[in-house]
Length: 113
Length: 115
Picture 1 (cartoon, each protein chain N blue to C red):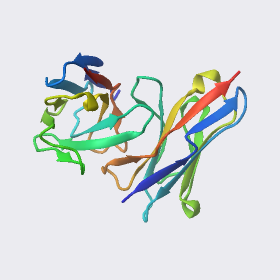
Picture 2: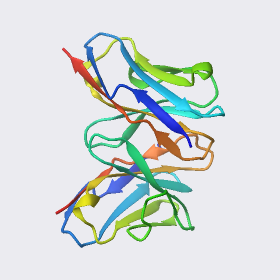
Picture 3: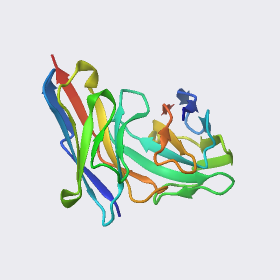
Picture 4: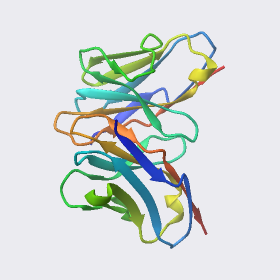
């Protein structure tokens, strides 16, 4: 079965500092990969997705992620954190097109002024 | 485009009653809809997958008689929590996808509180 690991359930960064959220997956075939953001009591908003095109994917709000097949990773970064980035972030994997999503445990980001 | 709505956004009910949650795709035909459950400070767990006009496929451990899912049209799926109990209190999120889409589109979620 597919599994997704997000290292660190909580990350604290200073405003203006680099944001790095880690995601590793288990899959024997190249999957589709997603990063979502969730604000309190809201649904999920797609930040970016990898669907077997360019390995460096740019998303909304200045986020980007790099697919590294050799490391089975899809880490999310943002060069400069903003207060509005404080939220829960989820990495998700879809093993094949049209298949179900498997979510990681989530990482809560706290941004300090 | 690709907007999914849920109704209600928040519901409080008494133990033993049934609650229906609607999930609608507003601007596309959703051939597949998904229902997730999210406990506080936890990740999303897939409950079931439903394709329009056919029975839902439930994940292991999800009681199909407890969580009734209907996907009667290409724009509407419903989740009915039957005989709800306090342990059913949770945040329920639906998502939908259309043929050819390479992502799911998520609804805003429904907060269920069972007293």
